Image (cartoon, rainbow, N blue to C red):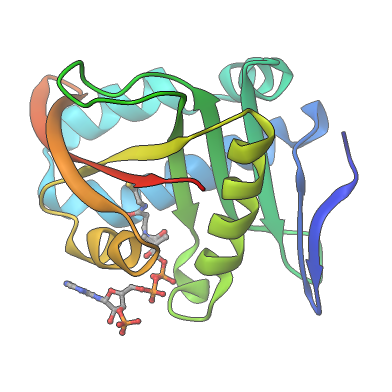
Length: 181
Ligand SMILES: CC(C)(COP(=O)(O)OP(=O)(O)OC[C@H]1O[C@@H](n2cnc3c(N)ncnc32)[C@H](O)[C@@H]1OP(=O)(O)O)[C@@H](O)C(=O)NCCC(=O)NCCS
């Protein structure tokens, strides 16, 4: 489980192990705050972060055989980005054969625009293929323009919407999907 998925120069993409739980919880909370704190109330942010990013939760996720957790690590071994995928269905009006969800996809700010996201996406797609995916799909906040632009570059298109609750706030996500040949 610790074998590299990708090794490119200073960048290494590998599967997470239980020993990564604390670091994953830290970067998960930090990247979520960096991205969304300005557009949400402090109360909703606090509720969401407390219920989602805790070392015990990430440990359980890493050990969950239904979930693949991939880490992109820099030359010093620090986590620069991560992706989590699982077999899961999109909203019921989206027609699919064998769907795999990109549940979370986050890259730390210093690495934005440097190609790391593309490498991590390729590794995530490889993991989705290994789970037999015919469709790869995700939810992205309707106001997260940068992520939507990135996903479009990767071949995803909008096929619907779903609700994602941050704290007490039900928000509209775009559901985006791409076929896997
Ligand atoms: C989403 C994410 C993984 C994309 O990685 P990235 O390295 O930033 O992506 P790229 O720079 O390759 O692509 C982003 C594109 O959006 C464009 N862009 C930047 N800001 C934008 C904005 N406000 N509106 C529209 N497009 C924007 C960029 O110009 C770039 O397009 P280009 O390559 O044609 O110039 C990364 O930004 C990230 O982790 N963000 C924070 C967490 C997040 O939002 N995760 C997704 C949750 S669903």
